[in-house]
Image 1 (cartoon, helix red, strand yellow):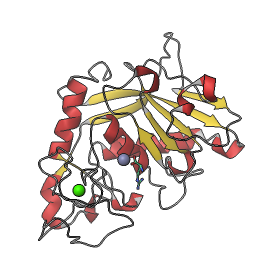
Image 2: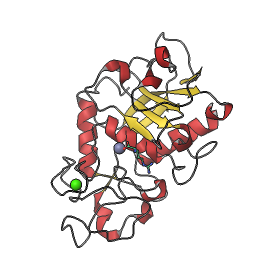
Image 3: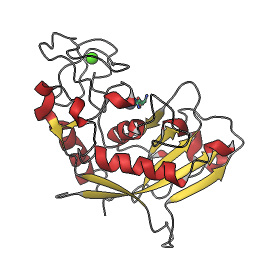
Length: 254
Ligand code: ARG
Ligand code: ZN
Ligand code: CA
């Protein structure tokens, strides 16, 4: 695509307790975060250490709640489903009505975002491009979604959804998913080689894999820091997401 890709989203709220049936305001707050993070207009970009400043990139992707449902009727872009399930896991159960969740809307036309209770400390998970249509999309813990309502620190700035959509658009974890080793790669040229995930909010410089003097790009959305510590994509990460939207997910942008 050239210019800005606009992606229609449907948010599937799957709830057992009334609190899990998150508000419209909480959903809107998440869309706001996405539309800043993927345009590099987020207010907290200033925490990027100066030596990394040139890596910050505008992904030129915008997100909106769908206004037309799969049958062509007007919609809020939000579905609400009551479930008897206390929590869901990474087995895609939330993505099917047969297992207490709700089926996706056509995954070639909508980014499906399920929001629910997750077990085991899981914040979210995503399906990479090229997987089965029945389970395509991202899943996010309700208390890691948006910036108000049930959103809880330190995951209350909407960055879990930014991170999961990064995966959905073909980004790997910045440390290369090889544990703490130095041989894994995220297939992105302009990110420093990094040993393992970073947590909390590290102090610059955080060295690993002989990547001094500047060290790990721990302010990246594809690391594992707290929400307030992840604030940017790089140019080459943007190129990967753009390639995905030009090919495998080419039917998505409107
Ligand atoms: N654990 C999740 C994943 O690997 C998401 C981590 C998001 N981190 C955050 N600070 N919000 O996909
Ligand atoms: Zn991840
Ligand atoms: Ca590594």
